[in-house]
Image 1 (cartoon, rainbow, N blue to C red):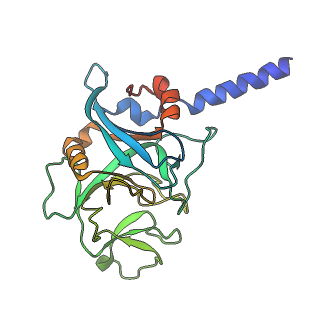
Image 2 (image 1 turned 90 degrees about the horizontal axis):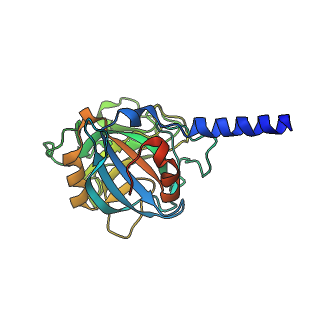
Length: 244
């Protein structure tokens, strides 16, 4: 009996450890929340919140419809430790968007000048590609081909496309530093249309994305929390997430 109780205690302790809030969440004052109704659902909603010294989250945008990976969600490599948690794990080419807690990085677009965003901004050109070859030393990076003397990738996506899905966007810092085949080049970006899921990114209308980009503030340490709704509700009290 003592042995059984000891095992149960260790299991409970492990579950508690893995559900501890990521450190970044404790310090962030801006959060973008994306929830879907299940692990396999490619549709969801996005809301964004901020907080001041009272640490109470306040809704600043949304709910806005979003489309994610056509195969749904899977735990990605971000700020939280998914080991011991239930659910699929993201891999390269699985058509799943990463679930978890992630920093938001550089904004990007086709325009010569940044829109009214405070985020670092990268102007895209036809020479910039997103490298998704796990064998490349540039895996999971945006690279200007004209500045690489010996390209070593066999697969990369052009960032200037006819459907303008990357006309505006922001990098999701998933799988950083990169682990081979753990998934690459994840963005929040403009959707192709309101019904076509992505290969792993999170897409929304141009209007919603521009509103979001204008609101983001790197000084507030913005994060993306992307989860199935049931998992979000499970972790919300301990992680201090806003109610939806």
